[in-house]
Image: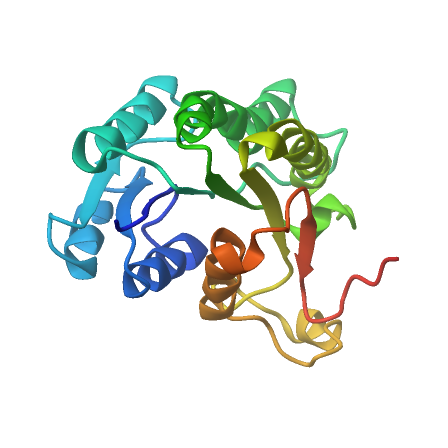
Length: 236
C-alpha cells in the first residue's frame, strides 16, 4: 500500500521540493497552498490518482479540515505530515504590534496544533505516523531582525518534544527540521560569509532530509529539533 503524505505551503521553495521528493519515492500526496498555483504544481507531480491539491491557508481551521478530509476521502489514510508555513512579520521586537505577534503565533504555532488535532486520531488508529515541522535555526539562535519567528519557533521546538513524548507509545513520531539559509532565500555576501561550509543549503537537500525523517529508516528518531545550517549553529 502506498503511503500518503500531507504537505502544507507546498507550491514553492522547501514545500515544493519536499512534494517532488516524496512523489519520486512513491507517496500519494495531498498538498496545500494559499496560491492557485498549487493546482498546476500538483498536475506536474503526477496524475489525479496520486496527487490532490487544496487551495487554502494554514491559519484557517476550515481549510485544514478540508485538507485532512481530502486525504481521507481519496486515500483512506495519512502516514506522513509536513507542516510548512510562510514567514511572519519582521521588525524590532518592541516596534511590532500585538497583531503582528498574534499573526506569527497563528501561522507558526497554532497551525501545527490545529492540524495535529485532526491528524493524530487517524494516526492513532493506524498505530503509525510521522510528522516533520519545517521550522528555523532561529528557534535556537534568535535573530534580532526576526523576533516573532525566533520566539514562536522556540515554542514549536518545545511542542515537538512534548508531542513526541506523549504519542511515542502509538508509534507516532514528530521531529522539527531547523534550516539556516537555503537557496530559496535572497542571500547577501555577508550572510554567505557567516556559513562555515561556505555555501547555502539547497531545497533538494532539505527535501531528502525530510524524506529520511518520515521513513522507517528514522523509526527510532522522535522529539528532535535537527539543525540544518552548514555549521552556523554549534550547540551541545
